[in-house]
Length: 299
Image 1 (cartoon, helix red, strand yellow):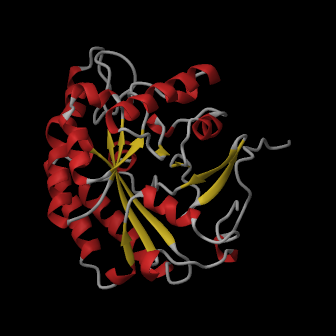
Image 2 (cartoon, rainbow, N blue to C red):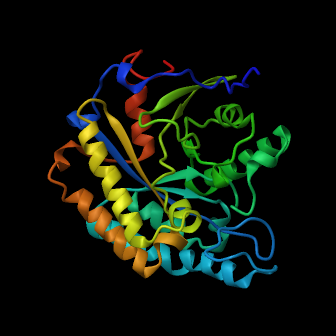
Image 3 (cartoon, helix red, strand yellow):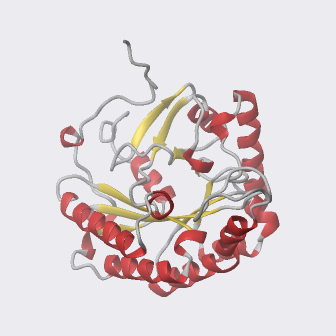
């Protein structure tokens, strides 16, 4: 049997790559990615903390809506307390439903990441022409409200078709966060040139960890701090990216927020904090783009 190949990147063992530093000699680039999602009522896909109900599934819809009404503001407050930057993977439907949210992101000076229109759908199901329209509509909404388009994209449900990287490159995107295949950025091939893959760790993503795998809040705190501590050790040999993927309706719940406070405080006060670059994906892209040729897989 001949295996099908995606053709986006070649195999590259991390131990054989050139060394480089993050800005100011830092070794671990850390970013927080907050997923801000809005859903169609009574139809489509949706995260669920319990078994899905008969539509309209009020219990689970309202639980997700708590994330936009309450949870996100608790997370914003925590980030402000600790002085931490973040990026926000936002459905453009949020502009109409909760305009105060993008306004606060703007006030913080944080980064918007394209995340489709709604997480009630996933673009991997679409024909190429339909997906192109979805990307165009989401991108134009960001342009309308922010005066510019996002540099990066994360598909709703981390879903892609065979054409997604090509369509994103052609729509002007510079990096993608769907491919959780590495601890370092990797240049991917598209039919129109290179597109950077920035790591987005699915293992320490609060939604699959706590909703799908049923880890407790304490479990998640231990997983994330353990992952972080191990990467602090590993980054002596290679510059690495640590991403913390969060959802407003998951980590915004009070008992989980307490765990997030412990995680972020652990990072900020770490004994080897001098190795850490707290950043956003767009700045990672800018740094990688300025490195000499040959430093990054896919150059």
